[in-house]
Image (cartoon, rainbow, N blue to C red; front, top):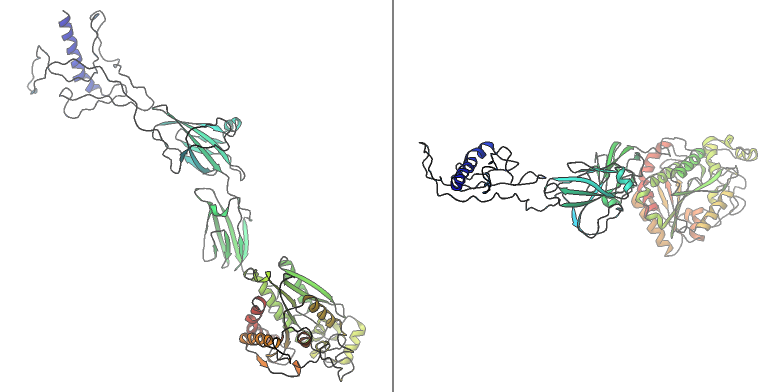
Amino acid sequence: MQTEQFKKWMMVGLIIALVIVPVMGPIQGQTIRADEGQPGQGQTIRADEGQPGQEQTGEESSESPSPSPSESPEIPSPSPLAPVQTSTPNPEPEKTPDQTETPGPTQTPDPLPTATPPSGKYVLLTPKAKYKKGKLKGIRYHKVSGKKIYRIQSYTTDTVKLELSQDTKFEVYGGKSKKEVKKKYVTVSSKGVVKCHKKGPKDEIYTLIKATSKTTQKVQYIYIVFGKKLVCHNKKTIHLYENYSEQLTFNYARSKLTFRVSDKKKAIVNKKGKITAIKKGTVYVTARVKGSLKNEIKRKIRITIEPWIVSAKDKLYDYDDMTRDLKEIKKKYANKVELMDLGESYDKRTIWCLRIGRKNASKRLFINASIHAREWLNTQILMRQTEDLLRGYRNYRKRFKNTCLYIMPMDNPDGVTIAQYGFSSIRNKKLRKICKKAGHADIWKANARGVNLNNNFPAGYKESEERNPHFMAYNGKKAGSEKEAKIMMKLVNDVKPTAVINLHSTGSILYWDFDVEDPLHEKLYEMASKIHSFNRYTMMPKTGSTSGNGGFADWIVYEKKTPSVTIETGTVPCPLPHSQYKKIYKRNYDMFLWFMTEY
C-alpha cells in the first residue's frame, strides 16, 4: 500500500514540475532557466537570486497542491519545486503521437536549494572618492573611527550623487552636532543625491552619510566635506580705463581657482586673477573653484577711455589751470605723488613742486620750466607729460623704488601771469606799478619785480647794465636776491639731484657744453647726446649761455657739480603759439619718458 502511495505522489510531483511550474512562471521572485528544450528533457531548473532586499526561501507557492496529512502520515512528500532529472515511471503512461523519447529511470528527488546572496563587493562607485582611514574633521556627532570609509570633497553650491554597487538605503548619519543633523543642513535622497542647504561664504559643512545595502545589509560610510561658497572681495561692477589692471581677490587661494573672460578682445585675465582692460566696452570675468560645477562668481568689467586731467587743447594754460590740475593729480594718484608747497612769489602765488617716488631714492631727477615768463607753453607740455607718466605708473613701479622725480612746472608764476594777462593781473599795487613802468607785458620775461630770474643765481652773476626793473634785462640787486631763485636753490640743496633738465624756448637747441673737466663734462655729453637722439635738437657748442652768467643751469653745473641740460623748445619767437604744442610734445615725448623712467 505504501509503495503505491509513493508512486502516486511521485507522479503528482512530476506533473507539477513538468506542467504547472513552467505555466505559472517564477514563484516568489525565482527565475526558472532552461538551457534548451522544455523542462523534463534533462535540464536543471535553477532558482536565481531574488530582488535586492527580499529574503530568498525554498517554500512552495500557496497555489501548489499538497497532500493531506491523513493520506501520508508516515512518508513526507517531496517538494514539487525541487529540480529533478526524470524518466517516465512504471506503469508507463500512454504515449501520444508527439512523444519521441523514452524517459530515463526513476530518480529520488533532491531537496530544493536555498537562494544565496550575491557574491559581489559592496563599494562606492562615485568618481574621485577616496577610501581610507583618518580623522573626520568637523564630525562630532556619530563619529566613525578606526575603519576605512569613503571621503569626498565637494562644495556647498554643488550636489553629490552617490552610486553604490548594490541597491542602497541612504541616511544622514553624522555631522558637527546632533542639532545640525536635525536642522537638515545636509539631506540625502533615496537615490543618493546629497545636497547642502547652508551656503554661507564662511561656512564649511561636514557630514557623514550611512549607506546600507538592501541586499546584504552591509554598511558603508561616506564622509563629505562641503567647501565654503566662493566670494569675491572686489565690487560687483569694476570700472577700468583702457590699459589699466585690477587684481581680483577671493576667500580662496587663487591657485585653487580658474578664470575666464567673456570677450578677450576687450579684456584679459591671467591665472592669478589679474584683469587688464584692452578696449572700451563691457565684459564679464568668471572665477570658479577647481573641481566644482557651480561654485563660481562673476564680475562685470566696464571699460572706458581715461579722461585727461591736463588739457592739451587749452590755448592759454595758466597758473590757475596748473594749480587745479596739480591738486587733481594729487587726489587721483595720492599714494604715488606728493604735492610740495615750496613757498610764495612776491604776488602771493604758491610755487609748486610735484614729487614722484621715494624721498630717499639713490637717483633724484629734477625738471623745471617757465623760469622765463613768456615761455609758459613748456608748463603745459611738462604737466601733460607728467600725467602721462602717472597714467602708466604700473609699468614703472619698480623704477620708482630707486628713483625720485621732482617736477617744478612753473618757476615764475607771477611773470607767467603778466605774460598771459597783462599787468592788471598783478594784485599788489606796488608791484603792478613797477611792472607797468617797465612795459612790454606781451613779451615779459622777468618776475613781478622786473628781475630776470635766470641771471640771478650765484654762478657768474654780474650786475646788469640795466639798473632798474625791466621786462628781461635786469639781473637784480645781487645774486640770489629774488624769492623764486631762493626757493629753487633751497630745493636743490635739500634734494641734491643727480641730473637736471631745464625747459626754455626757443630754437630747438640744446645747451650742454659747459667749461668743466671730465668726468662731469663726459656726463653732460652723454646726457645731451641721448636727448638729441630722441628730439634731434641741435647740440650747441660752448657759448655765452654756458660760460657762467648767473643762470640756474650755470649754478647747477659750476657750483653743484651736477649734469644739467637746457632744452630750448619751439621754432618761432616767444611766446610760442599753441599751434606749436603738438609738434613739441610729440618730438620730446620719448625723451621725457626716457629721462623719467630710465636715466
